[in-house]
Length: 158
Image (cartoon, rainbow, N blue to C red; front, side, top):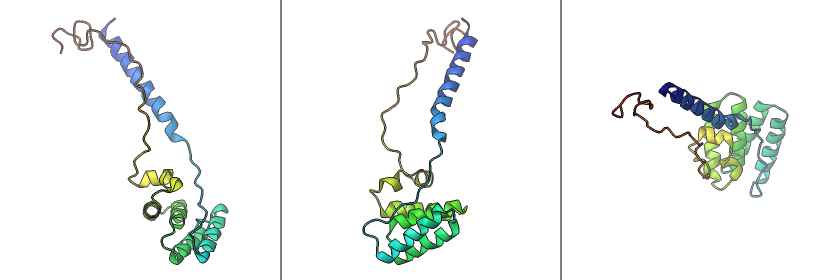
């Protein structure tokens, strides 16, 4: 077979490999507000729950105000920062949302929902969870690469 056929086959393999690898990355992920933790102060808990209700009703601005008030009451409440970030994002304020996603992660280093959330992965410098290396797709052997009739198309390995 001639060298062009092999190049064409290699191109198709790479194209299919790339499409298959990207297909699973475009799944929409629902964004859900977090409930108050057990250590939340009573007033902050109430404000956070009211904000969650407004968020669930699609009242992003009202939810934002409640989450900000919860943060005023208890600044170290990671769930309030995370929920505020969700509201800000819905309101189109990505810059401030980023700050609160990162603040939530800083306040709750072991909180799996916050650290594994797609919004934080998009904004923060969060490494992906360790995964097993994927096996490389099987590629046909290209005997004689660079030799006569190989990918190089000439003698001498060029």
